[in-house]
Length: 88
Image 1: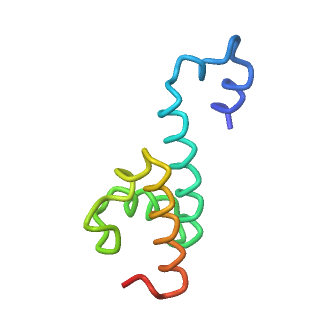
Image 2: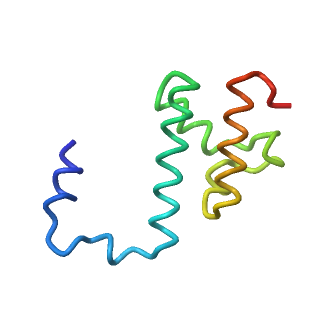
Image 3: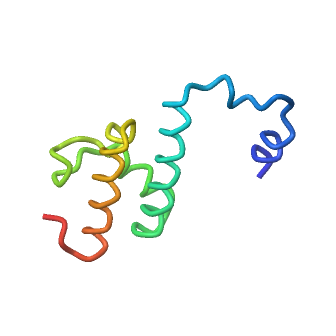
């Protein structure tokens, strides 16, 4: 919570210094972490999953796909399939 207070009160928003790609990556990553936390039951498990290679993602780590919009959709769809039990 303290971090969010800092960001909100930061003069001349520091996010201007970040590249557009980095900002999109961080938004995608945060969204996927919310979904994965709900699915796997804890933030720790979600972080572990994010950095492990997944069979359903062509043996790539989900975090490596989040730099593009297409990769983000692949990861989100994969999590949906896992949730419904059709991830093979």
